[in-house]
Length: 248
Image 1 (cartoon, rainbow, N blue to C red):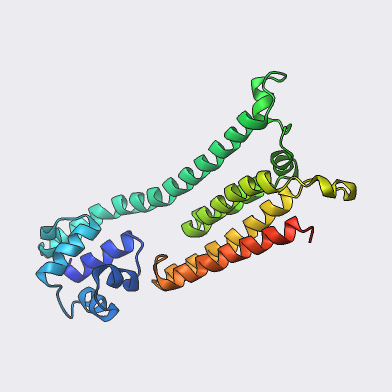
Image 2: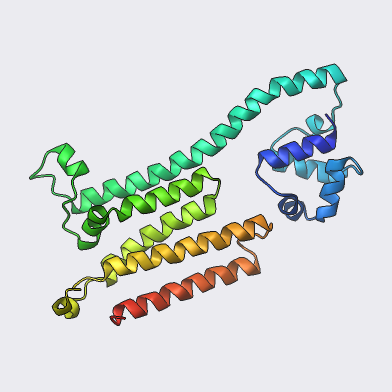
C-alpha cells in the first residue's frame, strides 16, 4: 500500500473531502490530489501533520510492506474497517436518540403527574401541565421531529440532525416563554407556543440543510459563509417571533 493510498484511506475513514483535508493542512486541493495519486510525496512537516490529524504513526504512513504482506494486511483490515464504518454510523444515531429521550423524560418530570398515575402511565402518558408540551405529545409532533432528526443522522447528515434537535429544544423554550397570550384567548388562541415551536423547527431544518451544503463544498462553519448563514437563520427566527406575537 503506497503513501498516497494510505492518505486517501485515512481521509475517507475520517469522512473528509479532499477540499476539507487541504483546508486543515493549509495546502491546495491539487497538492492533496497529487499525494493520493502518488505524483508527489508530502514533506516531513506535512507528514507529521497528517499523522496527527489521522491519529496514526508517521512510520505507518511511510512503510512499504512486501506485496504479499500488503495484500494480507488489506484482507485483514477490511472486516475491521467495515466494523468501524458501521460503528461510526451507529454511535451518532444512538447519541442523538439518547438526547431526545433525555429531553422527553425531563418534560415528563417537569410537567407530568406522577402522584396520580402509575410509573408506566406517567412515563407514556400524554397529560401535561404545560400547554406546549402536551400539544407536542398529543399531536405527534415530538415524534415527527425526533424521526426527522434521527433519519438525518442515519443518512450521515449530522449537521442537519443536530440542527433539528437544537431548533426543537430552543423552540420549546421560546414557546414556553413567549407563547402564552391571554389576549388571544377570545379567538381560541390563548397560547402561541405551538406556532413558535413549528417556526423554530422549520428554520432549524433549513439551517441544517445549508450547513450540509457548506460541508459538501469543504466550507467550515466558522468561515464567513458560515457566519452569514447563521445570521440569516437568527434573523428569520427573530422575524418569526415578532409575527407570532403580533398575532400574524
